[in-house]
Length: 318
Image (cartoon, rainbow, N blue to C red):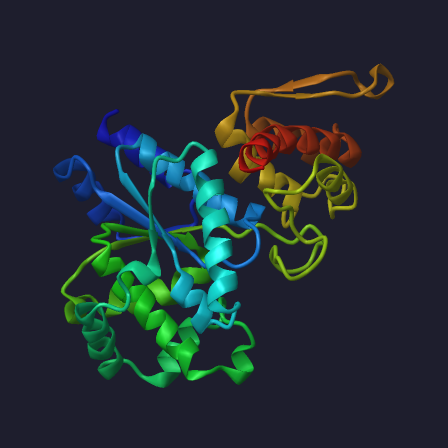
């Protein structure tokens, strides 16, 4: 795969690349660059997480070494559970990540974040960061930011230092990670480590307001959900006729389903136009926006495609 093809694959379904010129140079000079993405192992993996996991598959195809950080220490700092609970969740996350076909190096944060050199870097960064900047960077990821604890101010500093200690050339995350990544970009001279930040879109809640959240029932689908649960959740999902913007089902199709398939068959009765064979997401969007596809037919197709993906994962982790 040449550099242009690699760039095209990496840019696909991203919102922003902070350091795009550096990315081009990186691909030309480094045969095996490193991309990292971190996840708090709290609760089940849901479709919102699957956006970046799918993107990591693109990076792998483009020749990157993929590192996945299961940020168990961060989960504790962000008040997501006790040590025993988070350890159990981290084991499940590791199993799920391996089932999706990602040949990643999976690393526990606690395996290196208590080391003396690491803690020195965190303290050094803390000396150059204001409390206000730390809090601001956590606004999109913190639990109960209005009553933030000191641990939640330490959290973004550690995440920035993680990038250096994992020797990452690229830090990948959803747009909720942007403020933390920008703290890291502004601290490159202090850290003595440069990196490129790449951000993916957030999938809207299936209920129609805000983003997907594991704490709001019906707003997301989890990768260990039963077929019946997926079917019922999609059936009740927000999906206005002809509407493209903020339509979570179309976002799922664009960001998760179509990157994994060559075409999609949509089954429907002859009296409603008969079956459709759609070659790509852009074609589907045009059909839907023109009112040539009913929301319920779209929902049935999404349910079928998600079951193909999640059903495989479900069987492997049992």
